[in-house]
Image (cartoon, rainbow, N blue to C red):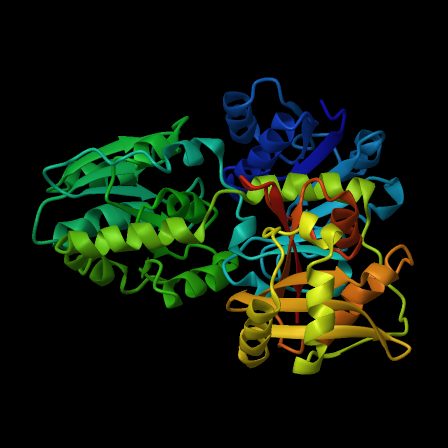
Length: 494
C-alpha cells in the first residue's frame, strides 16, 4: 500500500454530461489499484452520484450540488492529501498554496490552469497544447487517453458473428441537439438491413418513437453498467466525439463521429482528418441524414472495417491512467530540476572520435547497463560509426567541458517527432556530478522542431540513471519490459 491520498475534482449533471466524471473515476480506480486512497469532490447531481455508486460503491463523494455547498469547501477537504486532480472547465481558485501536487486535465483551450502536471489527452494535442508554460511537467497526446479497465478487458475479445451488421448509437448523457433520434431515423436510408442498439440514459420519448418507427431492428437501453461489453458485439459505433472515442479505439471498434458540443470540435476534426473515423458533421447538423445514408458503403467492405479496427488499436494502448498515476508518484519524490547553464557543450561526433568511443563503450560499467552487454571489436565499431554518422535518423554527439570530451550522447529517431536518448559518461569523468549538464547539453543540441517527445530507456536496477532522467523532467511512459528496461519520456512543446 502506498498510503497516498488523492482528491479528484469534476462536475457532472444531466445537462453538461458525465464524461468528466467517468474519466475521473477511471483515474481514481487506477490510483486505488496502486494503493492510493481516493475521493471525489465537485458539483455532481443525483444522476452522477448514482453512476459513481454503481462504479465504486466505496468511493467517497463530497458534492457541492445543492444549497449551502461551495467550491470554497475545497480547502478543507484538501488538507492532508498528496495530490489534487482537477478535471473541470469551470473556474477554480488557485490551489497552489494548499501544498498538494496539482494535476490538471485540460481539453484544448478548455480547463487550462496552473498546475504541477498538465494533461491534454486529445489526439495530436502535443501540437496545440494550450499554455504549456503554466506547468513544468506535461502529458500530451493520445497516449494520455484515460481508458477504463472494462475497455481493456474487451481489447482482445473477438466479436461474435452476426448475420447482419450491428450498429451501436451512443451520444452520452446530454445530446443537446437531439441527434440520437435523428441518427436512428436516418438509418432507414440504408439499402440493406442493420441491427441497432441505442444507449440513451434518459430514455427520451423521441428516441423510443424513432426506434419504433424504424424499419430496422432497434433496441433502446438506458444506463448500462458495462458499455464496453455491449460495444464488443458491434461492427460500428455512431458516437459523439467525446471521451468514449478512445474507449472504442482501444477496443478496435470502427466509428462514425458526431460533434455535439463546442469543446469537441478540435478533437472531432483531428480524428476525421487522420482518417480514424467517418465524420458525420458539426452543429447545426444540416446534412446529418445524408451522411448517415452513405454508411452503407462501410458495411459493404468488411476488409476495410477490419483494417480500421487494427489501426485504432495501434493508436490507443490503454495505459493513459497508469501514466497519470505513475507520474504523480514520481513527481511526489522527484520534482523536475531546471539545470543551470554549465560549461558542457555538444558537438557532432566524427570518425576521429572512434577509438575513444570504442573504449567508453567496452567499459565494464557501461556494458552492465546496456541492452547489449558483449564487447565490440574495432572493425564492427568502425562500421557502426560510419553508418551512424551518415544516418539522418541518428544524432551522435560528443559532450565537452573546457575543450575535453567527457561524455557521448546518441539520439535515435524512433518515430516521427520522437527521439530516444542514450548517454555514456567517460570513465574518468564519473562521480563529478556532470551527468545532468550532459543531458541538458544533449537536449540543447537536438535541433528538430517541436513538438518532440524525448525518450529514455533505463534498466530498473540502474537507480542513478533513472534518477538523472526523472530530475531532467522525464515522466513514466512504459512499464519495464521483459528485459527490465522501463521507458521515461518528456515533451518539448511549442
